[in-house]
Length: 329
Image (cartoon, rainbow, N blue to C red; front, top):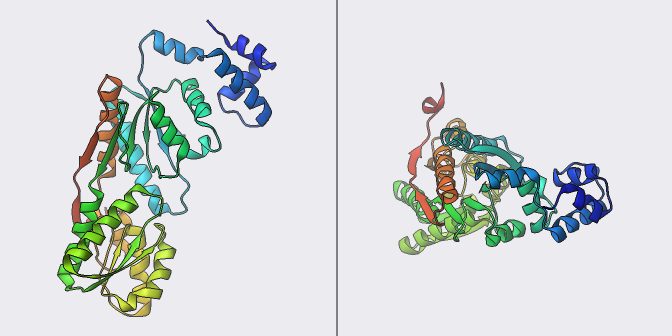
């Protein structure tokens, strides 16, 4: 069996250096990382922690991969609900969970990511907030080395399942409710990030509504930003009847801008975050149960680890008008 000593000899470095590279220690030169990773690949080295887990058939260590590259505390609420749902269900199912952040994998190749995860004894992952531009994560999914569940991305193969709500229908439903309640004839639609899977699905929903009801539709990308939504509302809302937003945070930005402009336009959001109750005016929104989504993802990952095949799971949602009295304790 290949040992860490063999890797160190092959790379021409100390054993402690190999350990630092495998465990992602800082202050290790790129050249040293390259030599160690190449030696690991050449020798097909598997760290002892992984080998022990495999030999004892313990495949219960999973990672939740989160993207915390956000500037808004409102988005932190969603991540915290995801974490609570995942950890709670993992404890019930006797799974060991660690948290990995996108920034920890930044600038790594897919082979380096695989070796890093294996060095942590990871057998399964739940990926949150994945965009179309995450090329390394796409390659990781395609490699089918780990059992994976992706949240809010329609990616499925033999080892990968997808969990989300029907984004297109949810956007259609909340926009239609707002339009019909207010007899609107035109929509300003503030979409999310251009590279997001949910962005395209939600955009499809509002476009379907506009076509069915013969509504005038103006689409602008708000990038899920309260500030961007505010600016776009100042620029375009006067000429439209309804403002439909692909997130609650953008809906709050739009509503605040309308209040400053001293004009009324119905606004609806998407997600159901607590902050909507403090927006000043009630707005329709889509309430997603993020805690439940994460919990279902853990159960699905356990099914994959037990030999199940990948599939798509679509959960339900609610249309609500969030009120201040409903959210205070």
